[in-house]
Length: 295
Ligand code: SAH
Image (cartoon, rainbow, N blue to C red; front, side, top):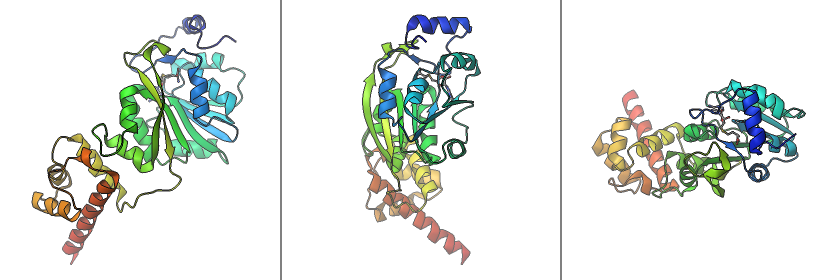
């Protein structure tokens, strides 16, 4: 069968199935034959591994994954791609494509059912309109995966791999650092896609820590604090948190002092240990207050 990165074949298969790419679904398909093998190889597609893919497009990455890993399960939202995939992925016995929205899908259950006794990794050329929420979901669902290897917009790659406590960081940076370690693998310019998007891309990898590294006493509070802080990142964090958590400004300033932080600090200046210390002091304060009202 001709290669899916061959523009003539890609056009032909799309035409025969009356398929047109959708901008709103983030459909930009890889047409450079060297990229998908690289993603698959960096991404742990190998014997002993099951791979979860999000967004198959016409199956160009899916195929490379299936040639290397024991099994590939992909979640794809666009039903119109299914007749194409039936053609392009015919002959592969180790691929299963599920129709669904990856943002809403119970991926933990899917992994337990589809990959028993296999190591698991996530590999994808992500739909860019949902990069951050998807990565947040993959992390917060605490999927039993070794690595998450994804193509994202270049700016998103910078944010995902930025050090916590730098200007490039965001809530997603903290989530990545909480669950693992992110590195950029390589850049991919816009001309490598059909249709060409108006941004460049990069492939990054998050290596998930096998066990939690951090001593956070209330994880939900920690992430609420991080989200609230970055939603108003240019403002003084103590004021933002006082409003968001319903604590008086004076009390919040005392909390900052106990955490050895200036109340005027902005969230983007705080390192991971500082963020954790702050959330632990807030959580202790909340526990003490709730005991106070009980007595
Ligand atoms: N991996 C392919 C396609 C990438 S384009 C390639 O590299 O060529 C992104 C793909 O994600 C498209 O197929 C799009 O239909 C799919 N997609 C978009 N939103 C989705 C969602 N919420 N859940 C699952 N798939 C989605």
